[in-house]
Length: 492
Image 1 (cartoon, rainbow, N blue to C red):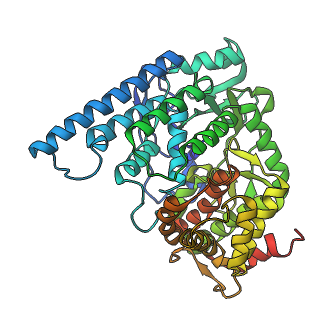
Image 2: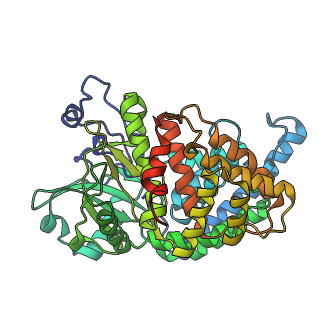
């Protein structure tokens, strides 16, 4: 799930089916428990109700109107520029202000593949652009950021239809003491509600949008046609590969029974490590469309930026440690490092983990080679980075010297925090790693001879995301010790 939110932002239970918008506030009792009572009560972003097109024909119609609208908007922008009316003089006429708003509206309404595609594209550019301009056109960046901040949820009638189909018509009276009809989160594949079971346990219920699973192939085909026709993206992105990986990830994430199993597996892998908490799964209530989990009591990780330096250090260390552990020990990774997939407990610094739909296994051969690339970077071994990159399939060995150096540079900077000459307290708040990785992207797009292995899309998203989370938190900790504990001391 992209947007699980803290229970400190729960919605009012008095909402009816006619409500079109809702804003939610912190429960004062929860704020007091978290020691936040003196702080201003937080206000959650507005959730907007909009019906989701569920049939392939209905979704095709929306994509068709999007393509037509973009074309009309481009013609209008061309006329405005020619007559001097438009304030914009340069850049793509397709990405006019009107067309950006149109794209945001349609993608927010369609959810599913449209939102997921935006996330996958952001992996390759926007996430790395932490300290200067992105190589992606600023209008595309604006679209992705606006879409990420949008929050549409399906009407109550649609939501109840999903629950009735899987739980029966008396589901509310049979299963719950309370059930909030307004979601506390809405994202690309489903939305999240808060409820109390008959047994008294507080839970969150993730409900999948109808039609999302069945429309993956057609949605991605339509999106690819629009992106290709409009020539919005730079060459070298291997859009076909991005679409293929997105299709596979979407299929996984649309199977909530798979996510339930992943959550239980991850709970076992974490074991008794007090740094982390994985929610309990209520397996008897889960289906391919519904996931029921324990309601966690932490705060969403983005709120931690105002916490003490000591707590931010602890959280950053736990996040980076977990990422390395996934690669080198678990060989099983949750590949979505979105802020909202992590909570934290301000009293003990425990990281609460969410969203296991994006989990995937990695083969031993792949991770062995990938691990050697990272270890070479940590050992300041440029030749080793190139050698194992070629063996893994990152490169062909026939690249230009410019591409070779750009690729090696992009990997070498990732090893900096783990090298022997790294500071004892690595300061992520002042690091330039993400910016330097970003600087190599345009070169690699121009000179790349082969797309990266499919496995690396999710793995790089998580690894770069872990660095970025530490950066946003301004964490400072002994990265060399983390590397030793999770990698160097292991016999791999």
